[in-house]
Image: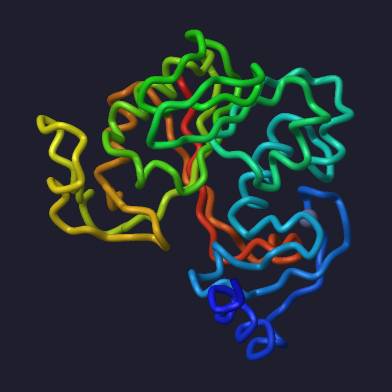
Length: 251
Ligand SMILES: [Zn+2]
């Protein structure tokens, strides 16, 4: 819809000098990163080719630096390293590059209704009760997903279950460094939106949790060692701006 695109079109023109030339570490091309999202720089700087955004490339950087030592995710596909990756998203840049070319890539989508399952590597999944076996993945990726999950503790627990020992959960969430977590879902009630106190939305998606600094001791208690990656000036050439990404290792 043209109306929905208007803020993007406006920013495309208004912030003409903000768009950056650089190298996309996901699709492996020299590209222009378009700063068109009104949702902050971490959610913006779209690659002209693969449409990846700042925080996606930040996650890609951690994955390729730690596991593949390649320049881009596109090159990682050719690597002999068999790293089993699960991303709780479809149709994003990871999916575009990996799904058809890298057989150890799994992904899923979520619908708030019953769904008939389809091919084995792309499934409907509720991240609060995953159907994958224990100790199965080397990497689990969630990008701005967990704040929209009703019971985030159950989600972290499930992700830990499906990770191998030494495996990592790499994730982005909107994070309040100086506040405590606010959770709007009353766990003892049925899953019913009328129990949500605050009703915060990101676009059309309801936010159940605004994460704060008490998440870190929580993850530690769960059996993770967590590192927060913060983007720096050197990452700007990859179109990574104002991004922070969590990497929790299952010990
Ligand atoms: Zn790209």
